[in-house]
Structure formats: structure tokens, C-alpha cells
Image (cartoon, rainbow, N blue to C red; front, side, top):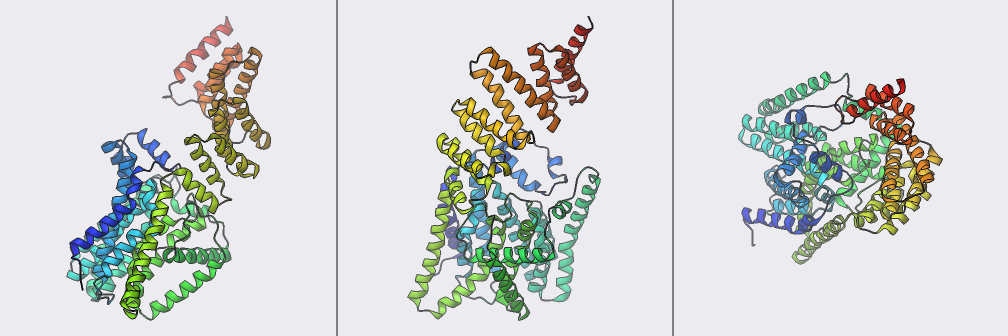
Length: 573
């Protein structure tokens, strides 16, 4: 039978990835996370020490952030190049899956020559991978998977040649995985077990495990020590997790099985795909229990071909923790099982090949082609949706109609495409449905949609309606309302009486904003506006408080100091 050489198999996998994801080179930035990341990179300077210094937040991903800085320095954050990097990382991962399958073939008792190629191809076109590849911020999953797969290959290489050097190399690669995405730490027990699974000789497996673990554990202790140095002002990620854990024991077990069952189903049947998964059917509790029971049974029976599935299912654990603690934008997401999908295809292909051998040749070939074509079609359609934020969020809103953040993002996308009427319709409907109280940014963006059409009266009405319902309780509302009023003075002629009323309203907004945020610039603007109204005493008090509370290096502090002195001197004359 005709058989491709290894070089041509790798070229075929690369060709499939590049062809399938090529349209994403023309995609823009996603309004969730991408724009914030791009803004943060463009407004700062690279500080390598600060980048790798542990902080107090939940995330610690210096290697990921370093790749974004490279984007800035090499091609000035060109979106096409940033999408290309994600595509190339996915291509690399598909090729690494090919090599991991090839390396595991003997241990899994799989002799079919198509095993590595089909594993790489199935991972390349698996629809569950689209979110990580198409979302620039999803690079964290791609990068950590690259290093986890490289770690796996290093461990297998170490076991094959009884080489402690390769065990040490594997440890360094695993450190790189962890500082790309911290939850890859969960792979550590798998890595140690791989030495025993492949090494077979107990003495070698024990020493190789120790060689692998030592650099990683020393690095972990150094990390914890550096975190302890900042413990007085920051909190640990574990503390953040516990603070967000609101389930009792029964619900913790129930939700864990439900999320586990949902992700297991997604690995094998990924449709429907959704960018913002909020609600999962209780039916998946039963699916999770059944999947767990079957896994325990097959592991106890030492079914060798089940081990890749076992690894994949175990790697769902971090995603379950995220669902329980809600520390991310969505509690459940397809990108969380990108790494799991790399191992699940390695476990699935031997069973597909065995099934194919039981069928007539034509039926086997037809079934294989149908599987590949179906996965490719779903992935291609998903890529098409990701090309445009408006399409993506319209699809997401249809699948998650109660998620207020999606109404807001769809409104933003419609405004960016110039469809102001549709944007106002979507955002107004969200407010009527009560979603604006859950997400006040819906009010902000609805007002922005009116402002873009120079309808300042309606924009002001939107802010006033929020304040009437909720009071002066939200920084975003106050800050954007004040910006609207400032802009209104510049672009719109008004009777002098109306101007005075608006200035007094603006002063009140800035005072409320200062009381809420303690942002001294708001108080500085109060002083300026009071001075414009001729209220010297009120202006002097505001400028004096700015001098007392503003940071030393802010640009407006010297001006506030001079104005305070001048007004105090004027009052004493």
C-alpha cells in the first residue's frame, strides 16, 4: 500500500493547518482582552525583570507576555503577524502531536503506519482548537501546549535511551510551559508517571523522576519565596481561588461532574461551538459520572490504549477549578481543553484504525474521509465567524442570550462597523431586559452610540437614567458621563443659562467621581470649573486638596499648587 515518508507527512500536516487557518491573517482584534493587551503593550516599555518577577495576581505568564513584546518590537503589533504566530504555533503543536503519537506507538501497541499522521491531522482540524488559535489572547494555550508536548517527547527520549540529561531538558521545557500558563502545573504528575510508564525499570524511573523534578521544584520554591516577599501587599492566587469558591460540598461535587462530563463530550463532539458558555445542562452530571466510572474501570484493567484518554481527562481538572471559582471571563470555555484535545486524538486514532480494519476497505475509507471532511467544515465555518466581531458576537448572543457582556460586545462591534441604529437597538433591548444593572458598560456604550450621531441630549438621558435607578455608584458611568459633558461644551452651541446648568452638573459629577475613586484629577477639574464660574473660595479648596492628595509626579499638581497659592493670596488681600 502507498505510504508517505515522514517528511511528507509533516509537510501535509503543516499544509492543512496553513490552508485551513489562512483566512485569520485578515482578522482584526477581538474586543474581549485583545484590545486591552494591545493597549498595555503600546503604552509601556519592556522591563524584563519586572516581567518575570512574580506578582500577587492569579496569572503568572511572563513567557506569554514576552511574545507580545516581541510583536511590538518586530512588527509594531501588526494584527496579521500576531494571528500568523498563533497559526504557526498551532501548526507546531499538530506536528508535535504527530511525533508524540509516533513515540508512543510501541508502548500503546499500535503498529498501523497511519497512527501518527491521523493523530496530527485530527488535532490540526479539531474544531475545539479554533478559539485558542483565532483569539490573539488565546496564545497562552498554544504556547503552553507546545512546551508540554516537547516535555513529553523529552521524557520518552529519556526513557528510551536511559538518559538523565533528557530528563533534565524535559524539566526545563516544563518550566517554560508553566510560565506560559500557570495551570499547566497540573501536568507534573503526568510527567512523573510517564517515566514509570515508559521507563519500566524501577531504579531508572525513580532517578529520572528525581532528575526531572529537582530543577522544577527548586524553581517552584524560589517562586514561592519571591511571592512571600510581596505577601504584605498582595494576595496569593490560591487565596483568590478560595475567596471565589461559593459552593458547598454537594454542589462542588455536582458541578465538578457536570463540567467534567461537558468537557468530555466536547472533546469527542465539539459542536455547538460557543465563545461564551455560561449554562450547562444538568444531564452532563450523569455523563461526567459515567465517564469517570469508565475511566476508573479501564485504568484498573490496565488497558494500555486508554492511557492517552486518561491523560486528556485528567488535564480537564484545571478547567473544572475555573468553573468552580469563576476567576475568568467565562466559567466554561473551549480554549481550556486545547491541551486535552492533543492527547485525546492520540487515544482516539487507534480505535478508529481498529474499527476501520473491521469494515470493508471502501466503507473504512469513506468513513475516514467523512470524519475529516466534517471536522474541517466545522472548523472552517468557525474561522469564518471569528473573522468578524459582529458575526462572532451575533452567533454568541444566539447561543448565550442571557449573558449581558455579549450584548455589550455586539453593540461595540456594530458601532465599529458604522451600524449605529442596530447598535442602539441591541443595547437598548439589553437595558430593557435588565442587563444594564448587571453590566453598566451597556449604558456607557448606548450613550456612545448616541454621541457618535451627535445626539448629546439622548446620550445624557441614558446616563441620567442609570443614575436615577442606581445612584452615583459606578466609576465608568461617572467618568464617561463627565467626558460626554466636556465634549458637549466643545461641539454644541447652547444658551448661556444652559451652559451654567451643565457646568454645575459637571462639577457635581466630578465631585461624586472623586468621592468614589479618589482620583485627584477629577478634583482638579472641579477647581478649574469653579474658577471659571467665579467661585474662588470653592476653587481654592479644591486645588488645596489636590496638592495634599495627588501623587508627586502627575502633570497637573504644579498647576494646582500655583492656583491654590494665587487664590489664597487673593483672598487675603
